[in-house]
Image (cartoon, rainbow, N blue to C red):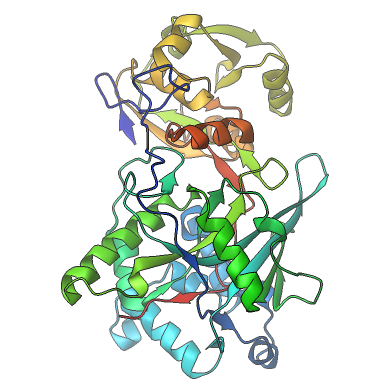
Length: 438
């Protein structure tokens, strides 16, 4: 992303404190729609016959897979979901990558590698893992079909402002495959969704990803449980936590299909979504750090940031202590080849931003720098490595937004600045797919 003086600023901020907040109405124009669907899932017995397990075929969402990981996943199994999520051209069959993905999905279905469930279901989904302190954690929710609504016209709302991003890639993949491959992640303001269905029996599917996160899925078909889940989700707004781009792509496809069908309803009116309670015990929120490059040679970044932040130089060389220093201060951290500094915002910076999350405070300062490039990196160690290896001139390490701050913004119908949150862990592509017919 190229930014500089005069560039656009995020629209977000402190509750009712600044005109920069983008407010979304919570008026009851349209309650969220949430319903079961007939999912497509890997047939575990067929995988076993082909010496493959579910561990071998799940993949992260497309937007967190780098080329190296994509190659590793593709090499793990010819049935790995990355072949659908991030397809490549098939010159043997004269297919472009989108056609290749469709052909592959059709082949897997014809070979019964992937099959359709026998009736509509909700899918209870649980991720079990350990956090950065080694404590056992779980994130539990329900995968279903969430109604599409244009932001501001219903009760499905983005939680942070998004940056422009081409929709053509995902839209063409949806056109060809006619399936939701990975779920949007929504947060409900209603309690009870995590315990709304029985998980005492064995899961219908279970897999462990490369990070040691265990993913488990149960089908929910009992009418009473289905009705309870639907009622819980439709009783309050759903905030899009992750997958804004997938949601916007689904909206574009819906508009396209409605135009083609004369406005008839169809599978394109909903999108596959994992809905989780907006609660501290269900979520781990990590920051997204900034990598800066393209600044003029010899530019004094520390001096340029001085009017917006109090800078404290760190004498110790160990980057592993940065998180402790940031938490003790509290402060952001600036890393360059010349050293490391803590950044504490000046009062006038907070006033100008109208926000007390690091992403918004930093945006005020970055908008005043000469033209430069900004990249986004959720891993602090990779951010520091980028500076040490010379692929970035500087890294600014941010602190995570709290679940309480996200909840407060959601209740007030406010959007946080772009690239504020990174929700961990990520649900895996391949646990269940949703066909989109018509």
